[in-house]
Image (tube, rainbow, N blue to C red):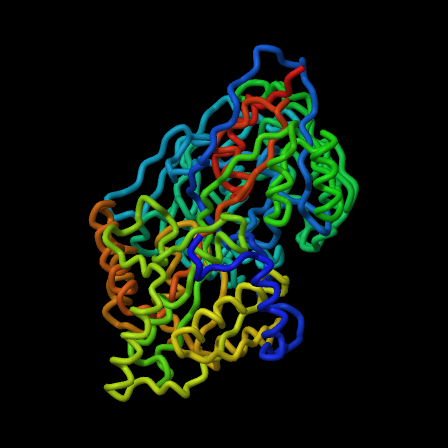
Length: 570
């Protein structure tokens, strides 16, 4: 580690001396200060799970932590109303048309094959004919149609935006202006067709993978009022939780546990496990004790427990490169940051690698693009490696041209309430002070954070950034009623719009590469860190492959498709 970097103890001491410079604004959080991504679909485990043991138990139980403070769950996707952990049991009890693996490649599930029209407006799926619901009824295309109609019922309070705006008749149906939904229909019992309003490349990746198929013969009689509440009693009844996945819902107790049992009639083959338990072990320290005692089999390790977990003899700790980054929005409209040389100076001045090593136990790396999906990451981007002398040169050049005043004070805002982020901000403050940039740190909560961002009342605004697919970055590349800080570059906006209608994958990737290079130079936002997620797996667990590890941080892709192969050794 370079002499310019600090240990955690140094950072903590620094934070204490800098505390007077941190302003606090309190309200209820509007943006959850969570390390969970908004969404994501690709990563790579840096350490593969152990090979399957030759000795297996006949059946057995695998136990996860619920990770859910309210202990609820539902078949609805996390993109809709419910949280990430609440979706995890449903991934095992319900099926989707197809799944995505950690590399964003498609894998058949209920749909064995599909076709996309040349203009990407018609998506046709052919379903398998051997799938049955847990009550023995066959799964048909009508179930898919009725599932879409159900989630587009405004009373369910799901608000599936990618369906409402894209599907023919979707907006009118959602608004209650029409009972017809021409954008989805079943020509026969095992074919379902989706028709879109306009060309939408990759729509099936971002929409249908977020669709758990529900049994029409059950949900046609379910009142939305029975399911819209997080704690709705309906979710704790086996009658409502009938799916077609490898495991069946058995029972659950709010805030305590969810129990699933093996589905011997699963079309993908009967699972090896007898049951899976999702249990609420309480706070992180009690979760760690449960892991240590062998009561918890698979655990997403918090950063504070990473080093301790490595010392446990009964677990292997695997690392997952997460598609989740932290960024600084830079208010390029402010006279203080209008010169891109000043923005570039900030990037050179902050020791991101030192922050990862000194504060994050090495569980993050510097990142330099808006694009978290690695196969789409542009080559040749400026890495902005820590270089305070380069930062000083850029600031001096801007000062000579009258676009930078050394007396400027940058307002730095963030909304993550943990002590670790206070340490990070204190480190950033010291890094910038070393090149002559004074900062005012201001932690915000709730509506204060939202209002500060929307009114552009900041110079640097720290936030989480995570999307599943390239086209979902549109919130940064389109105009809105708020300030244009997301990026008011009209040429970049036009390029981004072009990606949504460019059918050829290579051409689309090339456009995104040009956008990345443009942003990397202009820095209207400064990509900061990409995270690495540790997953502790008890050594008795077998068949828990790399996709399953990936699913510990992204519970909406192919990681649970191999659940039939999970087992526990004797």
